[in-house]
Length: 288
Image (cartoon, rainbow, N blue to C red; front, side):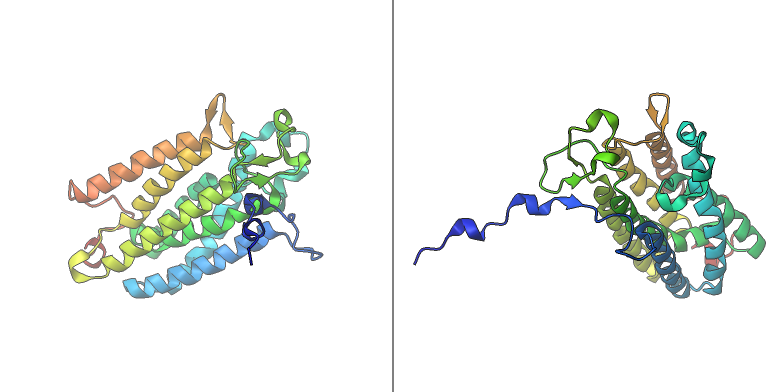
């Protein structure tokens, strides 16, 4: 008996992506908000666990999380609105509608960094110790949060016919690309990249717990800055909705800065064998 091999083949089209919409079925809950909330809860749990392994008071993580949420989310929104002001000037009520999408991770990082510096100063703990404990949670949260772009049909790339192409509804397509149906799922590219960075950071963290492989304070956050920025730079080049400053893509400029700072910081730590400036004087525990 001959088999119909054609019937056993999986069409390439099955791999295409299409958003089911921003709402969770009939519920008045948006995927975007649920994903952000989930990322925060998972991140706090992870960083609390890492703090215990690192010998740092885990209660500090719970307190810091409040500071980060209060600072990072509004800053992420304001950063986005500032570079998209022309589209918000005529509809100011939309500025607060964060559930419609439109936040920028670089704005969140700026707000979170400022909040962390103040928190570390007030609590008399090394900023770099805190940053290293939070870095894996931040990149994992970014990997989760990127799926909010999927459900909102936003942050996609140029048109493509690749098997994993993303279907974008007509209303969400840029004006010059209404004739195209499928685009690069840049949210997926970045989510996968971020998961890879997350794996690197966790590997470094647990390796650094071994007596003969101690990491210098700041290693994880600088590795995060370098690795994330490398991925974001090339992925941003595919996107159709980049925040712009004239002809320049803001995210690529900031990513270049992140690459330089991350690389220079690691060079300073491991080649120059110097400690990073901190909000407090280093102690033997914090300077291994």
